[in-house]
Amino acid sequence: MKTKIDLFDIEMAEFTPVIETIKDYYGFDMSGYGSASLRRRFIRLMEQFNYDSVFELNHAIINQEISYQKIVNYMTVNVTEMFRFPPFFRSLKDEVIPYLKTFPVFKIWHAGCSTGEEMYSLAILLHEAGILHRAKIYGSDINSEVLEIAKQGIYKMNNLKEFTKNYQESGGTEPFSSYYTANYDMIKMDPMLSEQMTFCTHNLVHDGPFNEFQLILCRNVLIYFDIDQKTKIISLFDKSLCPTGYVGLGSKDRMITNGDDLEYSTVNQLTKIYRKETIGIRA
Amino acid sequence: MESEHKIWLIGGSAGSIKACISILKAITKPMDRTLIMILHRGNDYKSELAEIFSNATGHTVMDIGHQTKLEKGVYIAPQDYHLLLDETFNTCLELSEKVNYSRPSIDVTFESFSYILKDSLNVAILSGSNADGAFGVSKVLQRGGRAIVIHPEDAEFKTMPSETIKQNEGKCSVLKINELIQCIKKENT
Image 1 (tube, each protein chain N blue to C red):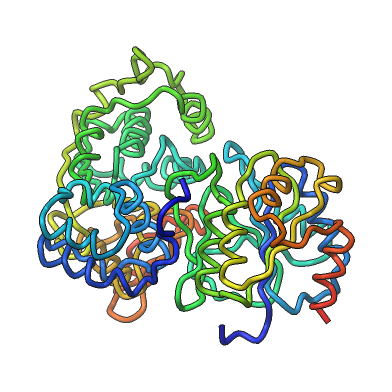
Image 2: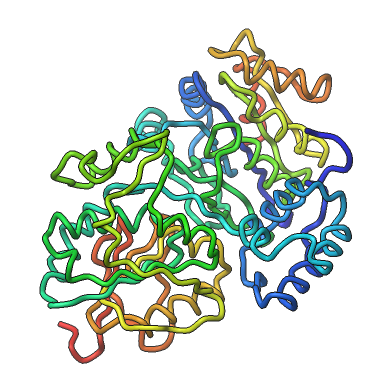
């Protein structure tokens, strides 16, 4: 494992030309990504493809020896799970779903949904509240490959025990096994859950709003961006959210609302759920 | 690093909690440096480790957050995230793949902190039953930092210290837990 040159000795600044190349070739701009994490991602990419120097890596990207898809796969984080951080989903169930119930039809955007586990989690809660058929759920990610997995709703069985436990802790009322069929070490989520889902590639850095939502979820995504980029993304969410709509973030994310007219109230500090308050109608 | 105070990272897995408690108990309050514990813990329950440490030691122990400036005090790496340090000396949490079946991984944190802090970083390895930390220690040493490994005889689970010593033969100090406490204390005056 530890042979040849040590990739960990490469200085972060050396990767700047590679960031430029990727931006020039594919419009995939990582300059607003947090440097500590970005450095790890580059090292991982080089390890995977056995490159010994940044020059080699840059050369390979210029000559398209590594596909854009592979770059996206290795440079972004796609780790997720069902009902990750159960207090969050319990909070959605208790504090946000009653609000969604008041709409004849409502729209949800899951930004950075990755392989979709949390979308199915949300769909299960909506189903149990009897309002899934009234929902339109949009899942977006920069990575089209993970969206394919999300669409299929087929997951490895080895995390099933954890998923089941998370589901129960989130306040689920049914046996979790009623939501999937198991075969060949895999589970397939009940297609009923994905009937209201639409998937699209969307890059939070440069793509704009595409609809108006009652609820936006973006969990454990903002932590990868620097403060400027984060502020831009929050403003994108603000533009995409209906007045009085909700935003749910990851437990280590924070809502930043400096400047502008962004007014949000904290619905739940622990689970990072916020509500948009339009000035004038605030209590 | 511009910071005038030293940073200590303490890594451990199985059998490290007791050792951490003895270390913290022995250090005068308030802590006049940054001490961060990176401990493996399960993620299938909500960890109360920060409260447990606070109650047991009298120090205010906090889970370290995302984009937190390193202040003097005692911290613990949060459950189920990797802990990194960025160029502005702010912490950075990452939810990427586990490393050595662990998140937080000691290797990841030691490597990232030493990349930024170079020779002003001090690390210690306590007890555990895998080799997470051994690679991290090698990077800390290579970059001029200081690494202390608990003598395997003094560790409840020996694999982690033994492997770390083996992979960094002759380069890290191997100390008894009491000597480590003295070491941290000496610098904490």
